[in-house]
Image 1 (cartoon, rainbow, N blue to C red):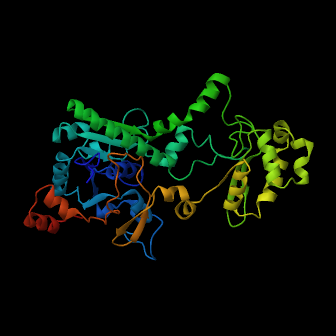
Image 2 (image 1 turned 30 degrees about the vertical axis):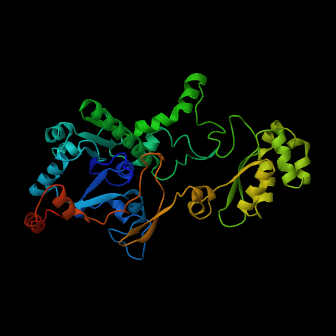
Image 3 (image 1 turned 90 degrees about the vertical axis):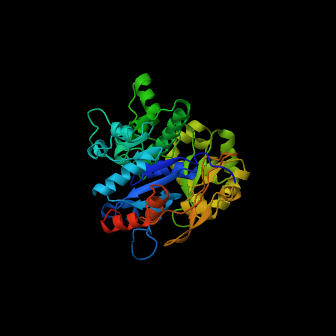
Length: 411
């Protein structure tokens, strides 16, 4: 059996919602024993988030929770109870990493700031994911992914010309910050292996977003131009270099689209031939790239009229064979049901879940040839592993477990 890269690493997972669980999902995929500490009176909102499988929401049938919490264990622990707080400290003492994504100051209010954690375990690695980090004027602000996206400038840079910014989709910076945090934790683990020293990781989502705004900063600093100006953001049209046609076009069916990019006059002629040389395409105004750019609205209308009655995948195949850059704008269902590339690489997997049944999961990225990640279990039921962890990791016997249960520690 191949040993996973993070096998033997234990993570005390105090995260919730998206950013923190995304980070610990990566660690779990590569073998870390990730133990989610949950509280039934303040349940992770994602456990009740859509999509819900079945007619009635429970604490265990959220598809979203299942997606970002595979390969983990869950324990119920009431840390407001003195004994529950003590058990949490015991769990931290036998963990390599503590991860949380609360607002700045929450862990300190619990007596579990980095200095406190070092007293429990001197070489602990403590990773905090928050909007602004744990220092500076804005450290106490409460944020989540879309907020961090806006404050980093990414929302302003997105969208179509002439309309308000649209943003980059659901909680983009939650996921991105989670990936950054997972990478930082693995670097800290390597550093500890070399030096024996743990450290604190202060992951600010806004800063992770600012890293992605480089082109806009350069345009402003070097050229003195605002990013949000007439014609920018360009939407689906190309602006550097400026070429046309370059857009997405409707196809047959509901919300079906094809992306097209013509980079030079030879490719334009290939597209004209693929369209059976319609009269409008021979108009001299479309003969050069400069002309196509000048009449881009009219050009897009003509191409859309041609693509609209056609099936998207068949049209993509036709155009690619003709030497035209074309691709279907795929939905999530396309990637699962119709994508031969992902199928050939065995990207999709099935795992059983007590309430959700046989569930589909995406694979593990990146792929390591010698020590690949692995899908072992679906997401845990709320508190599913409480007794198991108390017995196997903290050494509680049946009597102690029963006593804590009766006292309301495991809730």
